[in-house]
Image (cartoon, rainbow, N blue to C red; front, side, top):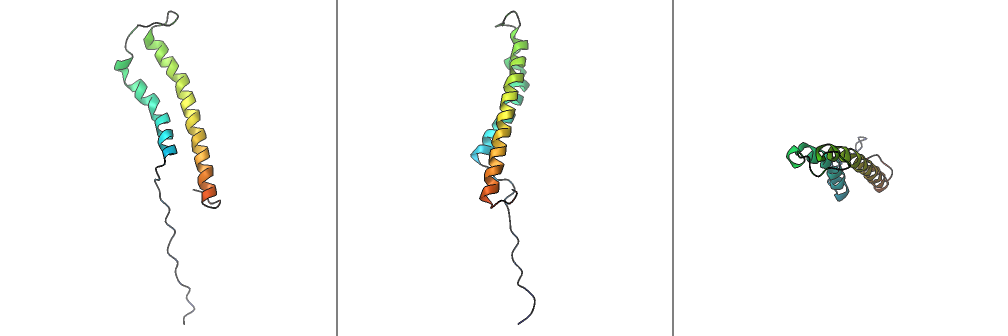
Length: 93
């Protein structure tokens, strides 16, 4: 026999795994863009809130909502990465 070791096939890791958690993360990050890019939905003055027209308070509300959604997406991502690392035996995903 020869002294050449047998070549092992390369380990193939899926690049773009779509999981339900990742879909939720994507929705959390896309929702503010859709809500604010659809200007026709909030180009009005009524209803006003403490004297502030709808156009302004709607956008300011999305600043807070976007913050909550981004933090949620980040926490879900961290949990997903930890789960994948433990599933792979401690290897980075």
